Length: 501
Picture 1 (tube, one colour):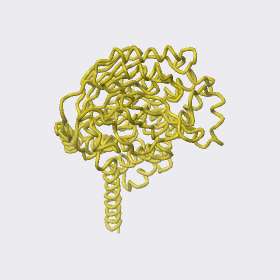
Picture 2: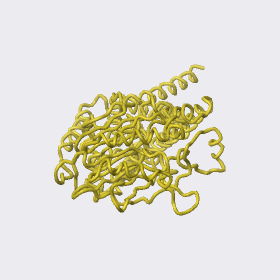
Picture 3: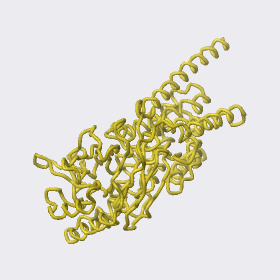
């Protein structure tokens, strides 16, 4: 009974240490909680009797981690999607159960590869945990929300590594730091080595990986603050059009940006007079707006962004669609969900993986991304080195009242750091923001405030190491650490066996 209680207590501790990491991210940004959460995970899984036991411990940690970090999906399913509360909560829990498989895999693999306890906690468990996190961000289109490394941006010295190894590299350094200190807590050399790495990150934060181009550009980012239950309602259609026309007329910037689906109808169904009013409100300046488009084939339509003031009407169509939100994976298995959801649009067609940025004026090459596409660092760099500035347009009213907008803004900060580019965020309800190439928030509009964010942004050219290598540097580092740990563990075991003989 005592042994079973101990195991239950450990699982509860692991789940709690995973759940508390939600406060490491924005808006709280208590980043030290991620260090502590990883330390608990590594310490307990490193002492597990078997790899199977370690996997269950990793699963308990992951279940707490994801239930806390993706709770906002419940709001979209129940409050705005119309799904019964019990079913929405069940769907969120099922997703958390799936996502928890990845830290479980990392714990099992790290325990199995670590032939001695100190190798497990110092090297193999940190490495396999981050490698499994990368797998989570790639497998079945991926879901890289709440990556460990993002929690450290832009507040800690580890941000200096972002232009080199990205958020997965930062996560690896953080996990290794936690593992080394858990393993060698009483050795000053361990603390000194971790401090040296972190100081190196601080020094790297002063390196200029990219170069400014031309003079700063004035920008206007509109935030209509239209509630989700009104955004697609036919009774509010004309009112919604008027809101963004009014904000466009207020805008003063050379580049005016409206959020995702600011025009809540297909372009082909939008009144011509309205499009002319929008153009007239800004010309000869530039206007970028989100608008869904129909394709040449039946049931083909796109979630798109258009440069409305260019005679050629350049278009960016969203490439990485949201599973269950913009398309149904395996309809035969999951199609039943749409009987319970009030979704205005679904079944989108993905755009091309590489699309040309919008050319605006003499220097600006604006690369759009839509909604949670800015979560995928490996895809954002597809626009480089041509793009001189990034823009994300989103409608996060689906998660109104949660921390989702704050968390996604922090991911946009990570993308700015990785690419050495300014990131503009134009959203319907928040957070509308201007982020510089160092990942710092220069200006932000309060959530749910109807207004235009006026500011300036700087174009940048050049490539960061991450823009060239993507996640390969982090993956190669993790793989090399595992190889060295395996070889050292094998040599250690051989030496021990000879000594016994």
